Length: 231
Ligand code: HEC
Image (tube, rainbow, N blue to C red; front, side, top):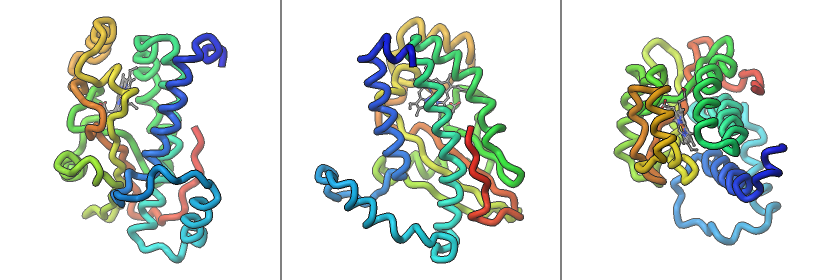
């Protein structure tokens, strides 16, 4: 709070990006292009028109839609915590934010996990080697890398052991360039090199596929039963 008051312009930009970013991710980057993006000025219109099919979720949803809804619900607080940690630290400079990410991000999947699910982030180019993809994630990463940016949508799949997985693509936004872009400030490069000597997560451009959130539900997990995690 205090920091926001000291650096209003900076904070404003972050808040804006946060809002836009959350919106984009929440929409799952729906591929239904050609919609009237500019004209959505009436909140009631979109709220009621699109809200009703979801209300009686439990029974009306196809299994695939139910797993997608479940995965999205599990990812949401995790995503918000990561963005919150970044926003809180960025007013103190990117180096402080790197430190905050380094200390906070790796612990969040544990906190957001439940008795019957695990979750995390991964990428074809990781910064933290602890986020390296496991075998089942490779196909999704490959498909997302090959897809057009407008076609990046969440996916689900049943694995051979009976568990269900959910993945949600993450795209680069302007805000991410500071630490994942092609031209880093020297101080940022140095801080990253020190904390992550094997860092591969630079050189991305805005709009690029950056990686994905993933959730793996144990075979006994039923969609619709996750406890509402709040981090
Ligand atoms: C202040 C620097 C900074 C900014 C800005 C930043 N990140 Fe990161 N990012 C990091 C650090 C540090 C890690 C490693 C965290 C860890 O140790 O788990 C990371 C990890 C990740 C990971 C996990 C996979 C990996 O490479 O280990 C993804 C995905 C990611 N960032 C995406 C983004 C996106 C998308 C944005 C913009 C919304 C963003 N980052 C903004 C510093 C940053």
